[in-house]
Length: 143
Figure 1 (tube, rainbow, N blue to C red):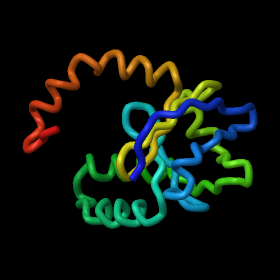
Figure 2 (cartoon, rainbow, N blue to C red):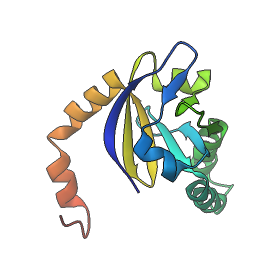
Figure 3 (cartoon, rainbow, N blue to C red):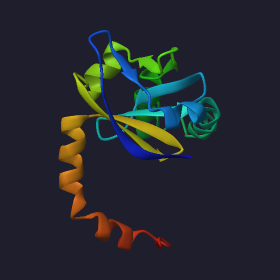
């Protein structure tokens, strides 16, 4: 399970340090792809396989299903963690998530998310007041 919030800088070569607490669960290689809300999603290989199987069941005849699978899979890339604990984020993913210097890496249960610091702070500020309402509206959600 992934949880927590960490801040690291992406360098000019597109390398970003993966927090040590996440490396073991991600494994030596994992999948990084475009996520929702203009961030990147990172999945360990076993989680990626389960998501892939679920997405294969979507009906090819549905326009939204085709659009989402294109969006999700076309941005996917296999990442390797180097000896310094870094990954190289390919340029299209950097551009999608607006990663230019300061990044926020989040643990979100079965995946990690990589955000531009500015986009994360904007998202969090916009959503903070509605978190209680969102929790209240979720069926069976109890803290």
